[in-house]
Length: 255
Ligand code: BJW
Ligand code: ZN
Image (tube, rainbow, N blue to C red; front, side, top):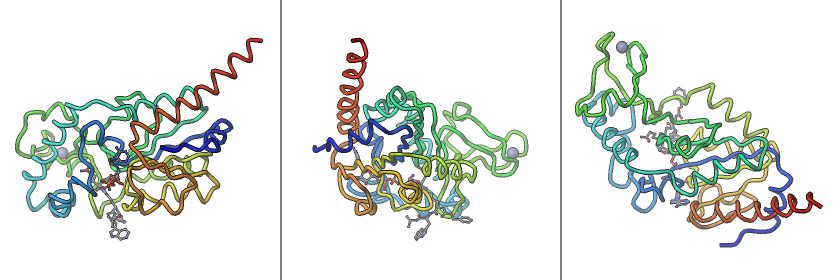
């Protein structure tokens, strides 16, 4: 794992950091990614399980799949990658996490500024009257529940293919990207749009792009630094290099 000293220098003078994350950051917690080796979309149909039409065709199947994934998420913990991203808040004025993940692990790891582009698996809402329901209410419910106010179908609050992303959150993510000095792209194949525009917006506004992934991706040829390796190993190493510098500064200021 090669982390250039040049990158650490850039980090030292940065104020605003943006992390754009995907399923790969949660892989080391034991949550499957969507694409690549062992990816969910290799064995399951995205059309059937992650689209409005798929849900309307077989709501119980889709509900069952989300209940299964919720159980997995509940049984997992944030890993070193999520925790170090949260710890970056100690060193920088502004740290924003723009995540495509729905697993809530950034929040559980302690990050404060999280923009969820594809929703959150821990929420549901009624498709008819838009009443929101927490995940706890239906924890043991095997068949798709109905709204207690209007009898409408209840669905997970996630963004399926062909659906709009939450517009205010996406607009805020674009603003934060444009304001960032350094944008880390962590554990995403960067093929799903419009989410994948976020690092592009950052670059267009002058940010340095740093990719951390176990393999190269669609965006690798556009980044300034590509670090091949696991997020849960690379991020702590970067943080360690940075913290050593901060410690030296602090020690010097004592004299
Ligand atoms: C590690 C690691 C470790 C592993 N350390 N790394 C053609 C061109 C452009 C766009 C389109 C197109 N055809 C259709 C579209 C649009 C479509 C799209 O982008 N499709 C592409 C796939 C082709 N987009 C949409 O439909 C979006 N909506 C939209 O466009 O609306 C338009 C509209 C306009 C007006 C009116 C109405 C609509 C919506 C996209 C929603 C995506 N939803 C999902 C499911 C969410 C819910 C759920 O979880 O169930 O979001 S799909 C899935 O993909 C999920 C993810 O957030 C998203 C991105 O995946 P991610 O995170 O990148 O994961 P992977 O698996 O792809 O990659 C993991 C990476 O980690 C890999 O690179 C590994 O190497 C790496 N890794 N272990 C570091 N330890
Ligand atoms: Zn309702």
